[in-house]
Image (cartoon, rainbow, N blue to C red; front, side):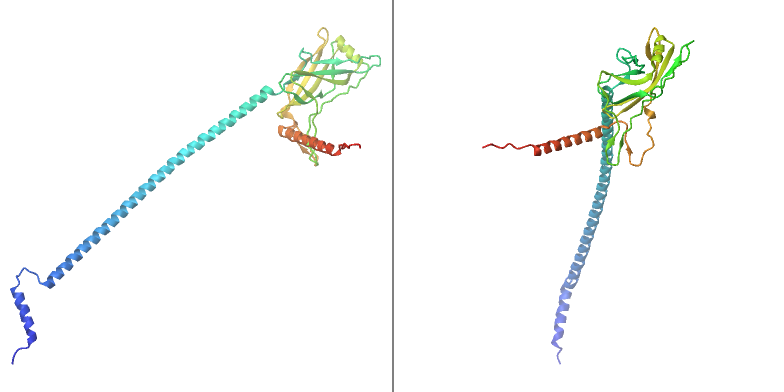
Length: 330
């Protein structure tokens, strides 16, 4: 009985294996080696790729961190420089404002009015003697002011705060004829806005620049007192005040005392001159009034002048409507 045929291939394969050199790998081992090499190569490539990826990531993060630090430093430098610029600008603006204020202040000082007692020839006051002495009319007092500034003095107000005090000369006797002088005539400027928004107060009196002003106060002495003063038997003392405004809205208020010098001088001299501006006070305020500054302010003057212009425009428009129209006669 013969062997089965399917055993022959095994014998042939065994013969081939026997005839192959020992160092020559079999096809199965060769494929396995290739697979192992490929796997190692792939793993190595993957490792290198991963290392390269993380290297790039680390470098990118480092670059990003450095860029952030540089940006922060740049921002800090910019903020510092900007702050310095803002400080410099603020200082410059403050200096400019201060300079403008000084210019405006110097302009006011150079242009404002300067009112003082007396005329330019030195005469401060005089007796206001009536022309007709036959009726035993009282004698008044002339007070002189002058404006030595370069702009008008506005709302000028001058008067007495006490009746004249007649001091007796040594050895002189008191007057036997009683006389009641007019007395105090001075009241400080008072401006206010009423419930209808109208502004009240102030005066229309003004002194142009480089000009003189006289205020006559009647009924201050009897004719006997005047004659005795001229003879040197009595020496009247005058206490009064004057106040004025300027175009810049400034207020000025002064107290003065005058003393009569008899023969041979025969004139009034100034004893006292006190700045009272800081002592200005308001009376108790009624409920329907709003007190304003004693002097008209520039913005108030502008509003008043604009209102006056509107009134004139309205008057002109009304006049044009009422004007008769010319008609042609046939």
